[in-house]
Amino acid sequence: MSEKAAVVLEAYTINGYQAPDHCESCDASVPDAEARRKHMEETRHRICSLCESYAPLGGYYVHCDERHYNDKWNDHMVAYTDSINMKESQQWAVEAIRKKRGGD
Ligand SMILES: [Zn+2]
Ligand SMILES: [Zn+2]
Image (cartoon, rainbow, N blue to C red):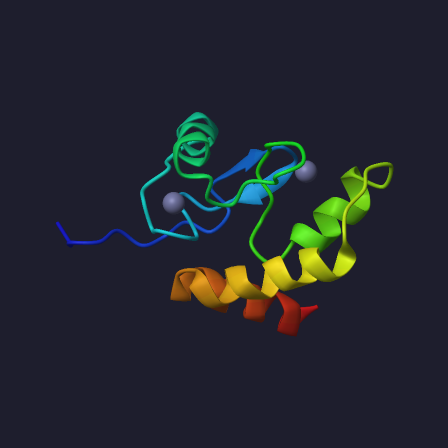
């Protein structure tokens, strides 16, 4: 057995988003949507502060734009949160997003 299993980037859907089976922030194993929900509740990693649901790494701005168009949120603050999250997250998560963006 290898020490660290490869991350499955689109392991399941949660709150309408494809989510990896590891936490993007701390690399904890979150094999399913329920485990992820629990982990986010405990750690506040990758959670939207407005609706408490999963917001994908690098996708917080889009999340707010799509789901909170009636709520008050500061677009500079949200864009800043996105960029800080990118810096503080696991390398595999950041690379996956770069690849996705590059492939669009
Ligand atoms: Zn975490
Ligand atoms: Zn939200």
